[in-house]
Image (cartoon, rainbow, N blue to C red; front, side):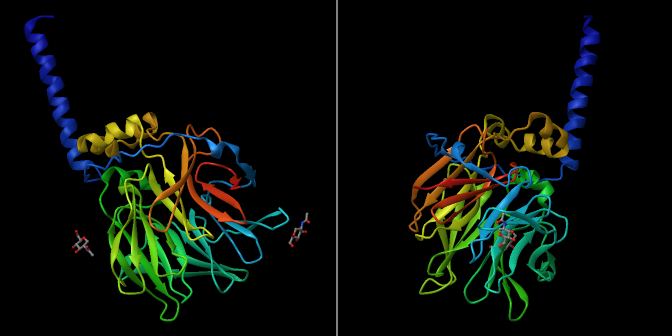
Length: 354
Ligand SMILES: *[C@@H]1O[C@H](CO)[C@@H](O)[C@H](O)[C@H]1NC(C)=O
Ligand SMILES: *[C@@H]1O[C@H](CO)[C@@H](O)[C@H](O)[C@H]1NC(C)=O
């Protein structure tokens, strides 16, 4: 190649790179921080591959599961349905409150179902209709209601995963890795919603301890869960419940023995670790989301852990390559079995714990 031509080719390449950098710097929808990468790793046992499949084919992304006093199992799905299974195993498409994705679900003392509509906020769903309990707090809209639990005093604690990115843009929130999430409390007597904790890095699962003296809320992108005291000398204080988890904690549920089941998203893969090394790479991916679809950086697989009330992992169950259960978002124990929800399966996994 003649010298002058190679100089101009190099110049053109440099100019294009500069243009790309400027484009990405000014057009990227995110302003990322470097992300955490936990060091803990666990040896796979693949026990989640042995689940029975409930409702296979009639459920699309059953994210979360709860059971009422009569043993009827309810699930909230990505396509906006609440479906239920009677104790005799028969299924019913029960309610479709709004059409947007439904996430966390809980049975209320009133017999109604409390559910997080990712777009609309906190809903109460009963046989005779749907009520929106909370869609904003202090004038700030709830754009990513995620998980819910009701306390015996009637307070409803629920998470708003991010105040910047909604359900369909969750990957941008992961790339940005900034604390946009919050934990909220709906008071059924005043019908008002209050901020309990702000600045959480993707506020996800929330549950109460057995005595309801504290709650635990998961911060997915920080691989940790916080403990917030509701009663006693520590009331109002917040501390780390468990950190350096081997995955991003999604939903958390109290087990009958007072321990907790936490579903862990598999947020580490060679691609994701590489993406997290560089804020520039994150900006590029956020500017050109098609690239994310092409490289498909999420690793298949699923993991759940049982954590004692002192914050120590006592048991782990996984599907290391996700051929049966992938992207498990919740684990709920009932009557000696674990019920596993997932945004990627068309069934609920059921596993005997004996
Ligand atoms: C299962 O129970 C439901 C509710 O009690 C009832 O409507 C249904 O007919 C039962 N189905 C079967 C197959 O027994
Ligand atoms: C949350 O972050 C905002 C903005 O960074 C800050 O102004 C505020 O004080 C923080 N709130 C709490 C409770 O830490």
